[in-house]
Image (cartoon, rainbow, N blue to C red; front, side):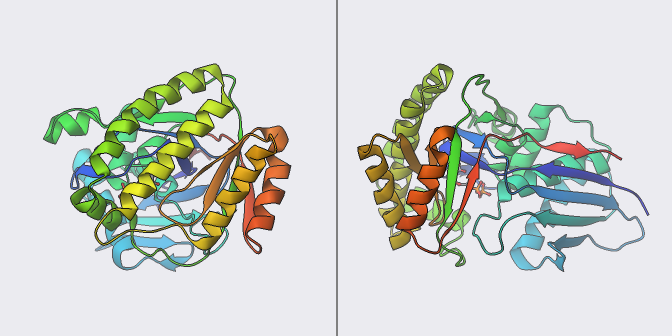
Length: 330
Ligand code: DP6
């Protein structure tokens, strides 16, 4: 059997969010985004070619993938084969190291690992920009997980081929900034609305979407400057307002998209109390009720304890900046 290629990638958390696509087929975002890749919850994916098979075989955490999950992987493999000029079906095996049902199984780490392993298995030699562009076709946030530390994903100009070429992530070199991100896994339930459907509805119906997108551009330049200074308070303030603004645009969609639960709000209140007590801590939330709290590493244990008390029963994991996607050799 073909030994194939194995890649490992980690999730990332956006400090400046991506929300909304201007081209759904090519997966082109409306706004630039900026994230921190984490050192927890890696995805490991092996892609082997099997020319005798009639179709791709896709296994997720030991079980055959079905429905939408399988469809997205097969469509992505079709794209890799088209670029490589190959036709062999693949056997894909993906494993996520995430607490079961934590709602953090990430399409970012998933498609970053699949892009790297798939490109290697089909003999594509891609530079990091081309790899990031490829990963974007699986999930826009995956473009950023190709890189470690902090990464910016450009929305890029134009339409069609020009847009495809111009939309990719690249590293934001940030030498002296190494904060903690305390992740409160407040709810194990399945997602209310898929982020894909929710962002479409937000773009189409929320009267706040355009103004959020405009303010996001200002947030991005403030964020880059704050990261350069290693200024946790400024990074946190900008990240928190950017995330709350994104959730406000969703709440204004028709019908409303609401990911934040009572437990989310309880954790947000505890973050405000921490700040009132002089502990710099700032929250960000994505397409779900989990809260990620940015703080100094020296404060991480106290922040984790406070967050745990605010949402009894929630699991708390402390992350730091992590590595980019890597091929595993041998
Ligand atoms: C709220 O990248 O998962 O986490 O591109 O449709 O696959 P698709 O969506 P995805 O959306 C992530 C949205 C977010 C913000 C972010 O990570 O920038």
